[in-house]
Length: 583
Image 1 (cartoon, helix red, strand yellow):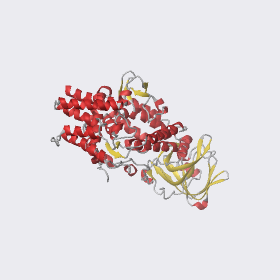
Image 2: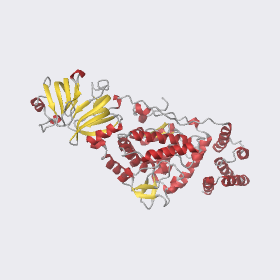
Image 3: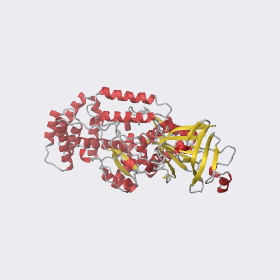
Image 4: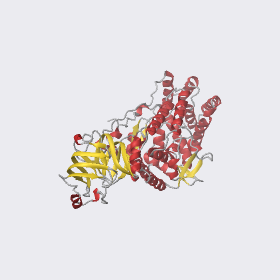
């Protein structure tokens, strides 16, 4: 096992565990730790005024430190007190898997950290975004329940093939943008590809719509009033650039409602508008409104059609509770209803998310097809017939019968047996010497063996994934492209060593280090590095070493003149130092 488990993680199904990777805490460099420290200090200073009160309380409850990147093991010991856990993954994972983790009260944390060059914002999920953004806010019980419920509903949303293509494109951009030395042209090309995909998605799938909801709430949500909103979205909480930008009049504030599902977003640019929810409870209300539009709750011909278009493993649940899981490839409609359903390849049958004995993928390896609806000329659906009714209509063991359905499907054969649900309703009828036809088309021939006919007047639910997780081998995760781990140059290793010396000095692990010597080395070999100079300035001010502090300020002014874009980062870092001394 590549991670330390606990009772919450023990409940995760195997197919989710395949995404988990070790955090490898020792891989974080002193530069990474300095980036974390700078962002956290700046965030807490600024967010104390503009974030929802749950944020700072959550930082305390989750034990997330300002000075050190959180260790997953330590986080889990604290998170379990509020009923949650955290796991490390490699960057973006498929949206349905991400949401399913949430349904199990597990926070997915991309354990990499942004480069110093992207200290304000990165499109790649990183530990600042996850640890400093998502983790603290789940300490609020109402919000935590919203997140869990969102995962539960979201992982059932039906995707399209284009959704996966967009996911791969976004993952690719996040990887190359955080990789050292990626040519600017390559990044621009990747951004353009995403833009083209977003403009040609066609009718949005359920997954695309619920991802919009996720983006405008969990990632970029505001709470309170339109006039005086507070931040709770993790994307804003973890971005020192966007958390300030979002509070300006340049960003339009809109009251949150279900229309957010149809508001697309662009991950490569700052958001032009944001949605404001009055409170966390209202988030769940909008989520339920959206869930009521999903095939999960609507079923019907539209639901099965969505599954067919997705070309992915999905499930339909019939009015008897029988669940058919597989890749659906055909539906025969009749007067706006479903007359016949067909899967291809491995299929399993279940009831209440538990596979029926004798109806695994090995029993239905080549697909499954069945008529639905009422019998022609009989107003009573098969599922509503009592044992006496079934006998009267000769739907009985040993009878040779021809069942003609309203939708034009005819099933002729000898009944072997029937399978009932817990309510006593018949959900499956098994035939031998069976012939299933639709007009002149053969849907099932006697020589194909035993025929199992599903019983159900209609489809009441259709959703992504199997009914019983154990019916299919879902451990098939293949990362097409992994996060790039750069080969470090001698110069880079030397810079990391300088950062480590100052980190050790501040922590009291080695107080014999000459800070002046480190500063001289920095100026000589790394004249454009600004963050270590800010850390040195903090130590100089703390020690009341006025001359040393002045020399550092002079150097930082030179950096600002050479690269004006760094000016506000340097000024903010210095302001934090001076503010902490006053307080």
